[in-house]
Length: 259
Image (cartoon, rainbow, N blue to C red; front, side, top):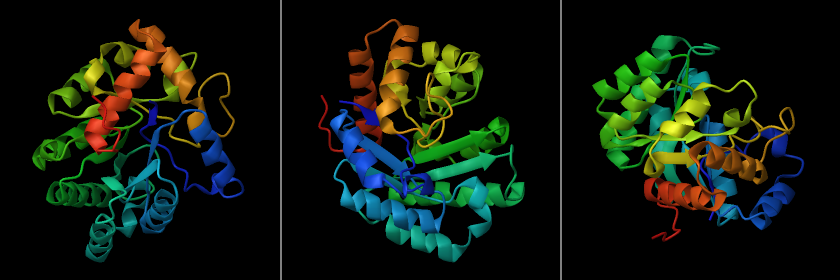
């Protein structure tokens, strides 16, 4: 079993050959894919993809880049979408202080509303955190987000931050960054995270692992991330793939019936 806990097959980069890519990654042994959305338009596209492929699931939410879309009407639409059984999480949501495409106060309000929604629907959160560590943690604590749970996707923080995240009950997902030549924090975190709290992801079509960095990413490259993390953690690729699949199934209820 191999689960890609975070990919974006709704991205326009896949428009020319999406069906071919998804059939190929299925044949490469990818058992499940979680495909989060970034705004309402993306959520509709993600739902259509998830309904067309039995091994793909989705999450609905408004990414911090698009937080200016946030409104009560938008949240009502997301709530309705989340009734679909292929929706397994609320996301991708969070804070992004690198680009600041949306004003920070709006990002914070949008995040808090998504936390409330996740708690109401008893769905986990898929969290985006870029250069916003302390504010994100503060909002999660203030809103008691641990009762919803979830995952910090594409984790970029330190071991110290990972410790706080884990103490709050969240999972940590690592991806292509662990293969980069100058990777320090992802490698340290990759050693530190307990086996039962680790997820793996590609963030396709972005974050392609070495030696294919710069090319379009897809779930077929997940084996490179598995191999690197297995080496870091001194385990076998088979065991790491299996354990992270179990973890993803536990968090997202993907129907793997893993024991």
